[in-house]
Length: 213
Image (cartoon, rainbow, N blue to C red; front, side, top):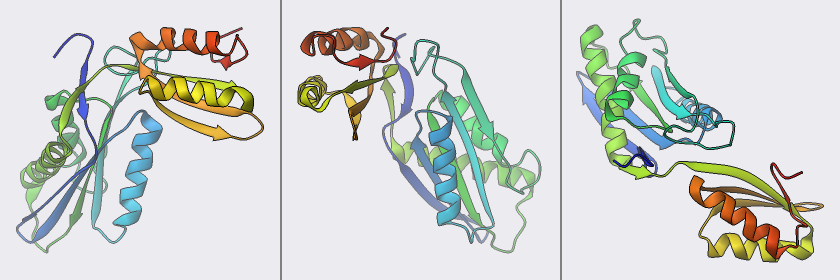
């Protein structure tokens, strides 16, 4: 792995297995920040609200002062919760898998439907670990470059120009068309400033870009 990349998952993953009557369903997904991780956890808990437990864990890199994310891009937040299982039997083993795999910006939830047989702390730890490991393998671990986020706001007359620049650069972005057009842009860190320069030049400085005075 290069110094300018970090390990994460390519998309969502899912894995199911049964241990002594209990059904386990592992879920994994990329998460750009803590809010995205918590939204995924809430989604799974709502979808499997009849489950005995939904055990979450995540490792996400918060934005640094310059907006960069990913390896070295800010504070790494780690979280795991037992969700009613015996202390240390679920959330910590789930988080340990993410740590051992060295992945960042990843969230996992392991759903359990109790099958009538107690598994013990050791059995639970192995089961929740397997749920996370199988789910992130299904999601596929990849290397990604740290990314930076910034926003661009323009009048409608310039929106087509800006959108064309973003599309030609194969940049990830969302557009919100209201009184003005706002673009939320996500781009590899080393490409961010050249991209902002292109937008400034193409709009003759009319674009409002995060950080510009």
